[in-house]
Length: 302
Image (cartoon, rainbow, N blue to C red; front, top):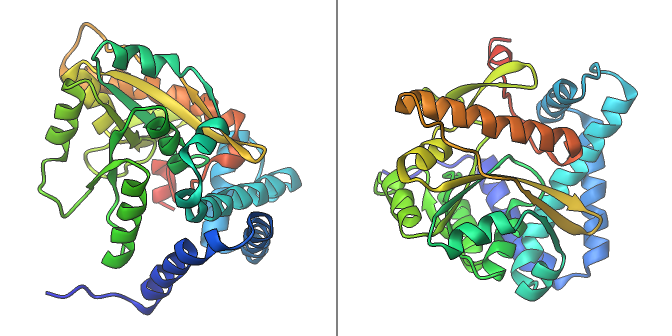
């Protein structure tokens, strides 16, 4: 059966195709300015995504919706979000050595020390900064890794995104529509002493693990903590953000797996400690947290 693709999906796919083709051919600063202007236009128009970002940032900061400071933070958040797209269009044309040079990393030894001993690492990240640039840095310092990608629509856009990430040196598994053995594949990579990178602060499915996050309940993916529990790999929360025109990554210390308790209890404990690290990182860099969807369970009922 052929895929049903809406007109809007086709426009988005065409826009991404044009972005990857044209943006690298144009001067960086003028195109960056265009993306900032677009972000400001989207922010001024408002809409569901902007309102949701503002609502999410209100939880993070404690500011009330409608507060001027919160409004300006939301504007900065939209600029950060659109900067991400501008950068992914340019990343394939940037030399690996430049990406490594422009990436400022705290705690890189937590990755390197484990991998040098043949122990796998699970890097768990919230949706912040430029995740793809962070991945390109990890590849650039000699550590290719495996990740999982959400299946975008239309299929042509998904294939372009996969090709883009594979071009940066990542191994990409489809979240859905693959062979159905993603967890087993990730576990195998880890047991062989490899690295796995996964987004980890939003999973509102039945398989998500409930955690407390900025004072309310949400769900996070079970995958990262479960992989640590099952394989013995080191779970390292990583916070990604922008530093001027460059990129920053804070690799935190390993989240320990409790020695006592059932597998479910261990996964829940690891998930909560991982989320606590995310909470601190997001509070330090709220403008670079790209969460434009509902996240907390109580918001789903509104």
